[in-house]
Image 1 (cartoon, rainbow, N blue to C red):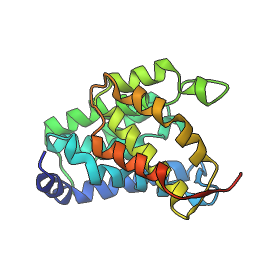
Image 2: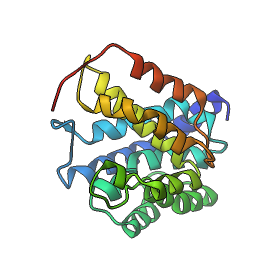
Image 3: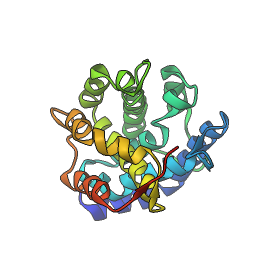
Length: 216
């Protein structure tokens, strides 16, 4: 999709997108989830969605694709962190009809079908540690689900940006740096939606930046 067409699509659907953002923030607020110990979790969701704004035109082809990308970015942690089930996500997306907005039937059908699958694919497996939770089955599901690799990369860029935002980085910077080569290979090779090169470059630039890691 041309970037200008992407922007026009966002502008035409801004009421729907703002309502989705508000509801996603509320879902995490209801379970008192925080980001970086002191920020509301909506900070992370908004940062993740900002990468959809920046790079979504590289993978979206239709208006419905744009809405799917944003909805998935806002909802990507609802199963893993906000105590929702897959069926809860299905019900939420199906019932999400903000007042004053109307979507074409085809767009609504695509949202109802794709968003829960993306959120499910991005939900960690059960495990005792980080490696077990992000195991081979987890990455296989991401690669086989349209747009899941892209949204996962938006999530990782958001997390990376937060770790370096204040120059003194938190300990997760070293974790992300160490696992990056395997991470990018696992979400990109053979993926239904390959990761745009410019997104990889942004991640690599952040990982090469000058930061000072603080423990804890």
